[in-house]
Image (spheres, rainbow, N blue to C red):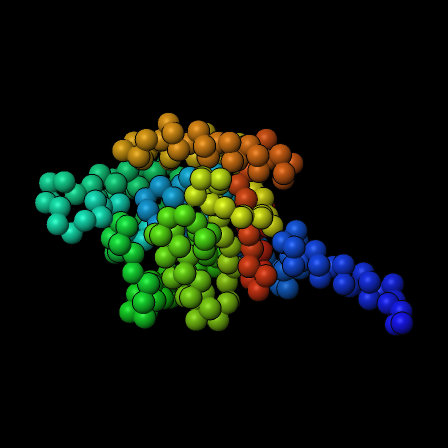
Length: 253
């Protein structure tokens, strides 16, 4: 019978902890502190980045960093046969611009249709061009097994671009409406949004056409629960990709 040394036992325990999603290895290089960085937060629809990351966005921009909310679509009706008068995109775009103004962020759109996301070679290339032109220092996108197909689509497009760009910038996943849309999300990092919560709330309520009373109430439960986990009154939670080259959340800068 072979004998396992104490050192090997500790190493094995560490690997199990990492595999279980409880912790990731320390970032291999320092965060890009001491300079202004650009962060792109990708979401399927206008409102997704605000609900999942609005407090974090406020913290970034208050520190002087640039944040771009990149929406996969403009929140249109999702049906090509609808007459223009019934198209919801103009309203949703105005709401997104108002939300970005509150958060001191910038809006951008990837040009797809609500509920009709396409993930193929051409759209991978198109999304890559967007990110190459933006040159982000960090990319935060939606959880790849969210319930909504547009969330899964932008997650796949963002991840593919990060891989093709050589994994040279920080990469994270965020959650929205956990328990209803995002499932099986085990955070590695938490951002304290206690002071920033009123601005997050205002940005989410800027999406007045999307029943914010219902959705913000659920998101508030999530941030309070993540606050309990992270040791804050309210927090937003993230999963950092294990191969992300550095940490780039607000507290790391």
